[in-house]
Length: 112
Length: 112
Image (cartoon, rainbow over all chains, first blue to last red; front, side, top):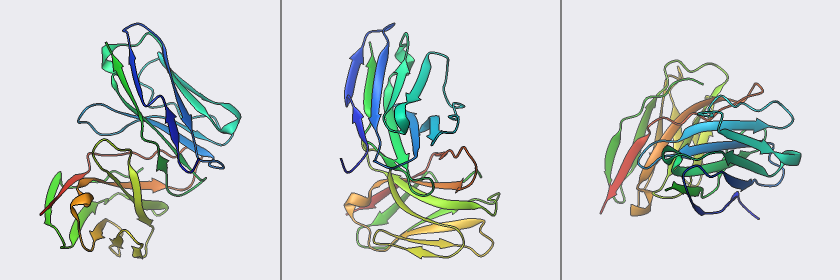
């Protein structure tokens, strides 16, 4: 595709369940970011992948959150034992090694 | 990344130029100034970036002061569709980890 694709676009889950959010970056982009945005709030950095380097996980809020990027392309953000405070829009972005980042439309996660 | 400071909100009349200021007094020599915007319920969109020189593209112009401690994003003829939160970010292109740290941004409202 031409842009960053995220799936699902919406996800409703029960408290305590695990969820997986998927990001398909733009082909050839070596950098990939995950952010989350709670209602009415700014973007909170979660994790950053750059090529084969160790990811920057400094933004992950707890050990319930993890992310991987397979083959330098698709990334999956996993949230274990979801809590209501995890409800937010989760945004993925990709970028060439330097320069502008392209964002997807996000996954709206609602934990009930 | 250097911290940036922006006014929380601004209004602009439709058809007039919108001038959005950003202070980045602690910016280092290798940090670029990036501007993104986020229209309600969408992912952030890249607008423009620069290092030292003024830049112009089809969306906007970026004016960076000679001491690089502040910059102004100019939308030359604002339309209602330019209503959005505008984020100014200082980010290095070097290093193995490069976060894009989004602050609170400026809510620009274009008035008819």
